[in-house]
Length: 162
Image 1 (cartoon, rainbow, N blue to C red):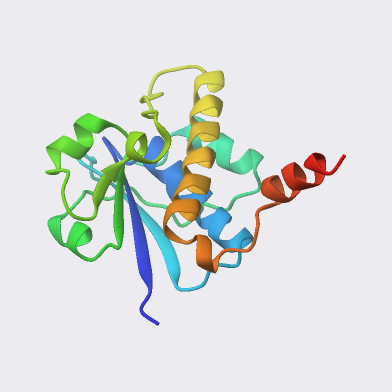
Image 2: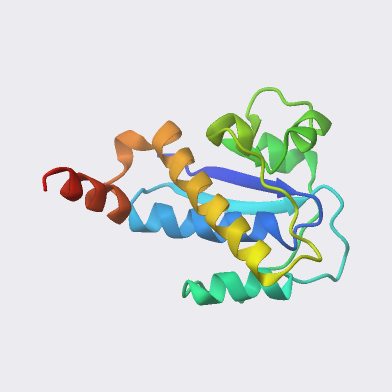
C-alpha cells in the first residue's frame, strides 16, 4: 500500500504546524493506522529557525520527541505529494488555492487555529488542545476504517454504559 502523507501548514512552521505534525503522528500511532505519516511546512518559513520554545514545551509535556524537527519552507511539490494538506486558517487555505487536497482546520472541525506566536504558555496549551481535536477529526474523516478506537473514544463508550 502507498504511504499517505498529511501535511500541516502554518505561517512560519515554528508554532502550530510542528505541533500538529507531531500530535497527529502520535494519534495515528496510538490508533495503529499504517501507511500514514505527517509532515509540516510554513508559507513564510525562515531559514535557520527552530521550533518555538513554547510549542516545544507543549510537545515535551505530552512525552513527544521532536528532536529531529527543522522548520521547512512550503514548496508546491510538497502539496502535490501529499494525500491531504491541512492549513491552520481559512486565509492560508485561500492563499494556497483551497482546491483538491488542500483544506483548513475549520473545514474539519468548525474552528480555525489562531497563531499563538508571542502569546502566553496558556495560549500555546490551548493551541495544542485544538490540534489534538484536529488530529482526531482527521482520523475520523479520512482513516476511520483503518483506526482502532482512541482511548478517549473508549472512555466515552464506557461512560455511556454507566
